[in-house]
Length: 320
Ligand SMILES: Cc1cc2nc3c(=O)[nH]c(=O)nc-3n(C[C@H](O)[C@H](O)[C@H](O)COP(=O)(O)O)c2cc1C
Image (cartoon, rainbow, N blue to C red; front, side):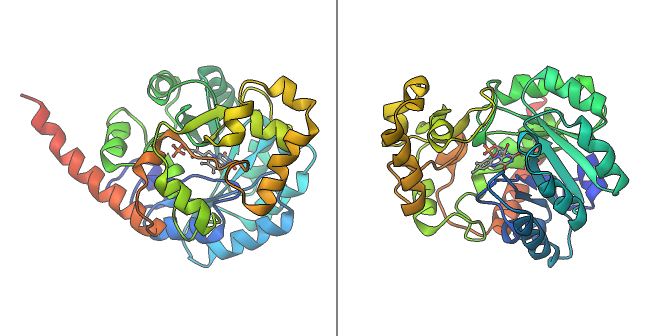
């Protein structure tokens, strides 16, 4: 058992958070992570409705263990009902990412819900601390899905001295040794997305899970091309890390041209509908090459923990 301020706060047996991943992390995945002793989270995007939030939270709550919900701040101006449904579901933790968390901290605290904020720069971290969030998540650019430009380790080292609140490390962590490394570096826990992408409890279909298992770590691209194609108004500072495919090879870096090419954009929209891997985005981080077997999320969390314990036990041997 590994204890940190995070495990004590949420009554966990391991400081592993299952990242909120819109389109992949629903209530079943969150519940399976929590059953492994960590904290499972549900990912919500602007494509979802309030009903999705309510249903998935009910599924996660069946585990009778703590779980969380991750919201994308920039989507909430048009979709306030997503925030309201989240508060009504009473998760233990709500993560407010990709924007200024300040307006949401008070209402969440009033409802007795702890607040995390994913940050991509030291300036983001200062803003989140000023807003009164309880937990910071330093998200490195190695991460799958939408992310910033800073690598995890330098970002984590800059964020840690800014606060005495728990800081969780996100991005590129998919082994127990890396988990141990993040904890030794000062993180209170790890926030894991890509390592869970091939779990059957997630919302990825069998074909997507097979692509994840087959992909190597040098086959990802940080790009806005898919968002431009799908007409999703992601702020430009957060591109998305996805597996390279025919579409990203053709259009990454040519987003300005893509805006005016309706036929090319339609390829992605159609690809999403038909599940065409050459054109649909499949978001995944640089750790994807480490995901080689399909396991339950509960087993992923347990194995990370056991391997991290072993790695931590070996640390004193380094001191000659
Ligand atoms: C498929 C996918 C979807 C994601 N969706 C969200 C999301 O909805 N909200 C969010 O805050 N982060 C999202 N993320 C980012 C994760 O919260 C997390 O930062 C990331 O997965 C950690 O890095 P890793 O993928 O290397 O483990 C997503 C990541 C992936 C891979």
